[in-house]
Image (cartoon, rainbow over the protein chains, first blue to last red):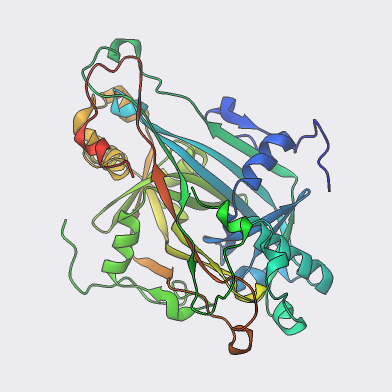
Length: 221
Length: 221
């Protein structure tokens, strides 16, 4: 499942942002780095003509996104049809608050990926098992091998949709403030406040008799 | 702009999740607390029959959400029409990773709000100014009074959409693992890894000649 060096996703009208095009990228390396840095996505679909956006978990496996359906039995009904379900899956990492001297130039630093396409429900039990393991490992790398695997009934009770990555773009803002020249001397504080998810000390359940696994020690910041 | 105690948003088929209904809430207090704890949302709309989900910033003012259009001139074109634009605005806070003894019971703790409705572009200059100030203050409370206000040209160049909160629900998972009784003795670590956004030390721009404002000191964790 190695990525092809230099490969790119489809750059077209749909995957080109209307604003700040210079912040966009379509190469696999940029897109995959952003997807691999997270596990929470926002899944959009259309229901009765209106948009619905739900938070859920995902995993990237090669050029495929597996999206967990636990919050979304509604979309999964559509994804189970042969024609599939049009979706948009968006992953966003917030990296900083950009405070400029002018209100107008306030911004945030971020990395995001927007993936458009038609999703299909994963029905093959073996693919479903691999997809669920991948989702667990996307959240905590190594975890799927250190818990009781799902049995056939559990696997069947869990819904996952599959989206082939194709019409995908990344968008990123990095760096400092972009103030107007004539504002630079104004007596306001300007700069960037970094922000990132921080993981606290793991809290063991009362039924845990083993020590903290190595893969959780790494999660602490 | 005080909230009415005990008031609730519309509870109907659209705002009732199909899964884990016991985690849902419709009361203003719960919904507003989640909205007020964040500033990043995912805005969903329909374009050519397909869903689009974009990250952007928002502010809550009473029972109104103002959503920044910097990433979304596409949706704003629709929101500028008289009939408005059907949207779904979703705000999600991730609070913890829930690691169960079984793969099946892995989960995350979170708080989310999903708001459905028809958005309209804010065209009144005074409302637009208030909305933009609210968005700046949603990110960093107090900031809009400590920077150069937007001039008429800047205000006019910034797009904001207005969504009246009505068909809105909150969904929350808290607490520990929910393992099966027969799995409790399994020799795996189980528990919760807390997660929250952490703000780093602010990095001043080279043109900043004043000390760190009090409202930024509070942002450090």
